[in-house]
Length: 169
Image 1 (tube, rainbow, N blue to C red):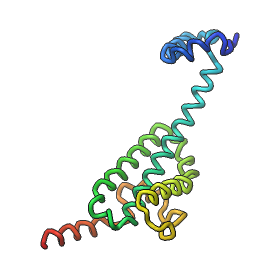
Image 2: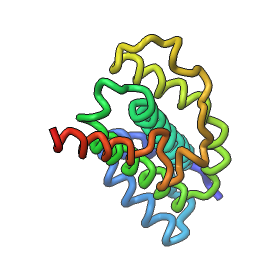
Image 3: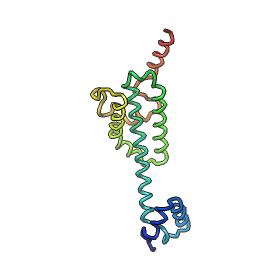
Image 4: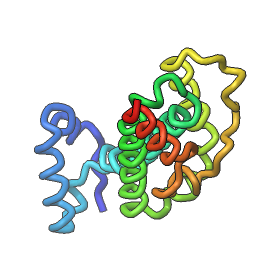
């Protein structure tokens, strides 16, 4: 099998990426391995895995950020609870979709949980301007809890009770 180097395919790859993808797909379907731009193809395949990992890491970071908002940002909770709860569900669904597409990401998610919690904590502290000493540096909830659609770090019943009390005033 003849392996072509970047020089024969570099122009197509760098000038018209969609055309390069089409040509690569046709060559693969036809088992025409001699016309594959293997160097760029390998780079693209490796990039797909990195992209999925970046994506699921980002969703996890934002999920942790919003769980922290719900638990600790008391001054904003009354007005923002519904929006934060919606965002929590959005990030959970996005993570679930990524995991359905690539089950091998589940161990990766566990590996990056503490790091993404800490990143989410940084974002939360910037947004809330709360004292960083009151927000734990390590999560006080598990990854399983974070992903559980029925779990929140602050019970919404408390919020609904507050709403009812305000209506009666």
